[in-house]
Length: 264
Ligand code: ADP
Ligand code: MG
Image 1 (tube, rainbow, N blue to C red):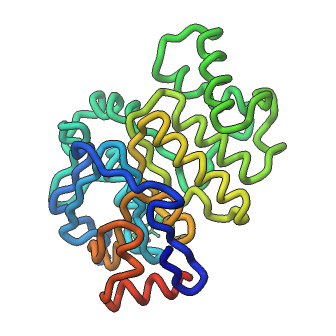
Image 2: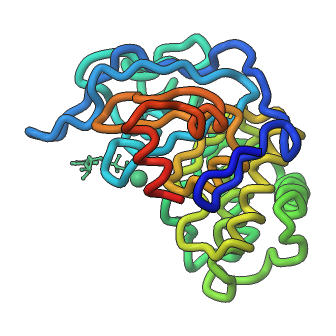
């Protein structure tokens, strides 16, 4: 294990870091500004099938903006975005709907519908995007709720749940269509370490058992170490380090060291 100021990043022992397959997601020379604010600056990255790629970086550095480009919620000013061999950023809206079915998205705020039950929240994408019958939908909902450890909570309202449980309901909803990839935006923010661990274990479990390609945005180095096959540090809209979590502790790069130590 490599230990740096209280954060242990164990190579191999704790988890095997998985090699990626083919590139599933590609950003090519993407730049994005809001007015005078240059958020992404000529950023290129390939995200490989079957890996968990963790994007870290300080607040306001463009991490959520990057995720939104992948699912076509934002378009670059210049550059290209690809998913599964299809260009996303110039795609017609009806094709984008199809792409979005293949990508789960766990938003930073859990974004559940307060007036719907847990079961109805999770079933929502099935109602919107499939022709499944009600019994088939219920069976699917039962199955994903079981996967996130929330069996039997179908009839509860979101307000009756803890923060960690709400995250898990959102997680169930984001995988209910059987996506190839899931984007997680700050999945453990606001949760205590025990509840964070539970979410992290779920993310690792889903990506390994179901072969889901995961992109996880976080500024929590402890979580990042636990779930990442690959870690990418974004600073000022650019990638400044890209490698295994272990490589982050070993590097001599001053900026990376400052970030890692500041977080520990
Ligand atoms: P983070 O790395 O914390 O997720 P974001 O990607 O959310 O950061 O945002 C990066 C910067 O872009 C921030 O300064 C944010 O205020 C700005 N920003 C994000 N989305 C928009 C938008 N739709 N309009 C204007 N500014 C935005
Ligand atoms: Mg963000």
